[in-house]
Amino acid sequence: MNSSEFFNALNRSEINEHKKVSSFGRLLVGITGGIAFGVTVICIPFITPALRKVCLPYVPATNNQIKNILLALEGRSGTLLDLGSGDGRVVLETAKNKFVSHGVELNRWLVYYSKLSALKNGLASCTKFYQRDLWKYNISAYDNIVIFGVEQMMNDLEKKFQSECKENCYIIACRFPLPNWTPIRTLGHGIDKVWIYDRKKF
Ligand SMILES: C[S@@+](CC[C@H](N)C(=O)[O-])C[C@H]1O[C@@H](n2cnc3c(N)ncnc32)[C@H](O)[C@@H]1O
Image (tube, rainbow, N blue to C red):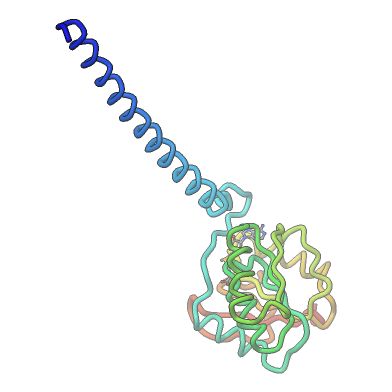
């Protein structure tokens, strides 16, 4: 091998090495990009509520709040709807207490999670979760409605209850009361407080 052949061979091996490194780099960029894309897709439904007219973020009910909801429902039966059902905990706990419980929730991941939890807990047959906007969902079929909302939405929600709820419906508002209706009872304190309303009184 003369010197020019030697240098040519050396160049070729360097080029091959460089190609290997750059395909590894491309793979790394691809994986990182894929992960970033996946995280973004998952996070978007958690961030978009902040961009809506009324920002209702995902904040799960506390255990005491759920205890108060169940106490408020003592003596009640039939169908129940959780408006903005989050991870489905209110729907599942009320279903364990013999209600046919439904949840409406905008965030698709929370809806998938809720359906999976219902399956895992053997509650799939008495629960349903819909990926819907609570403002557009017809609530007239329900005997009991639970809402853990924010203060800014309670006035519009009261109007929706007034026009859509059936006469014997009970409404349980968590953390924030309805602005004009008088509750028949309240339970708990602070962040766990719930207000119970009887639709037929309004
Ligand atoms: C405060 S969390 C309450 C979650 C659940 N009800 C609980 O008590 O654990 C409110 C939920 O409403 C959902 N949400 C916000 N705007 C909504 C809308 N327009 N329609 C349906 N769900 C909505 C949010 O994604 C969030 O999961």
